[in-house]
Length: 296
Length: 315
Image (cartoon, rainbow over all chains, first blue to last red):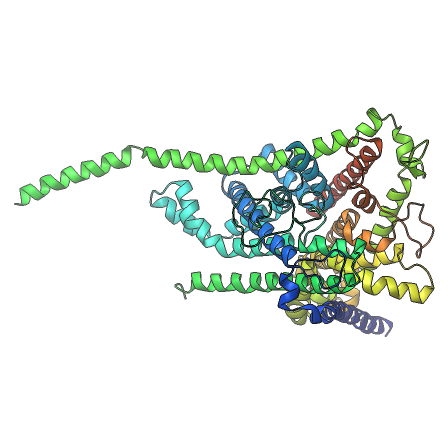
């Protein structure tokens, strides 16, 4: 009898825990969205922040986040896929491979602030660039490489052996087989991983404080030359991203509506991250269906 | 006619044979280039890890070798006054702060996370997979500054009103971190529990054990290394988290006195002061030494995880 009672009690407790977690997430999202909802208008999303007065927006920050995301992915994706290919297709089972695996593990568990400090030392001070978007992108590349390598390796390993063998049997070289047979088949997995990594880039702040910096120059959105200091596209200018802006406004905001700005910015960040997550799911499924539709 | 076609055929055959016997030079170089590029990408990972270790260590060690602070004093003294006269570089308050806040987060998140993992795999697998798992994955994706922001706007005022204190506290930091590492713990523990062979459960149930007895005595017992891995992973994330903690912890450099008192952590100290100090000064170097401590801790966490992984394989 006692055992049965315990069983019942445990089931109830575990169910309560599950409800608590779901409730927390719903509460969290609801709180952030309801707080920031009234700020979500075009003016807030496009106008520059105001340091002293109320009524500033987050336009440059939003642009910086997106631009940084593009830059980071341009650098990180080729490197991540390259390393993933090596780990899945070429790496022999020896000490060196074990060491590479160990490095991936270390890299993925490094605190992001440590990555940021490394960036400060190498990409900011040693190169003499100062705080730049490009330095931030490199730091975020370091931060995201392990994830991309792991995702690519898993996706490549999940491609059926028979496809690879069929290609090799036709006399196609190993590299050609990888590029034109295995990689396309593994693409859905890689894309899903890349979108999830994008979400991480978009929300990351600690690694950017001391690499991309905590300020933005006055951007002139009609100037598109890569060299001009006010051009939004210049990768060698300091750039405060949305996540960094939230932190800065919360910890040292001076404007009377700092709280309002933080509310709005947090809501925008959450919506963006949710979009990344959902689209990763949806897009992965879609590509998968598209690519396997011939077979059934 | 037939003689002619035959001639053409043999000619073609010999051409094909020749083509198959000679290696295509272009393809061969392409093959080697491809492999080399992939190898360089993988090698880059090793280079990055080694250079992170080297650069942070060389900066961090200069506190001891250039500025002449003794390692013992640095690690065990509780007086932190780098701008004072004479200056004091005891980082014990930061170290203890980091450990306390991490331990508190793990104490809160571990039971909840493992409970949720059991629920997902053993009690309602259908609902768990369809609802709880996506919810957990969404929680993983929420940026840490957002956790900090919620802690600042919701948790800190709540603690302030309830207990009539400042609000910025060890408790606030622990709760924010607990929420942050909960998804990590849940998903890793769920994988470990799912990997327990079904035979074990069946055997236990056949002996007349209830579901809870089976979970407690059999499933959790054999998934223990996996669950510990989950907790350690969560703790390593909590230990290294910077901004979310910095926003709610209060940043007072003193030894932790109670749950409701403001403290500092290694990460919050670095975040707040790195930008305001001049490169190369003893103060700045001391911050790099704190970063080195963080790096060392993350290596220690990896060693623990490796040992746990080996235990799991041995089973």
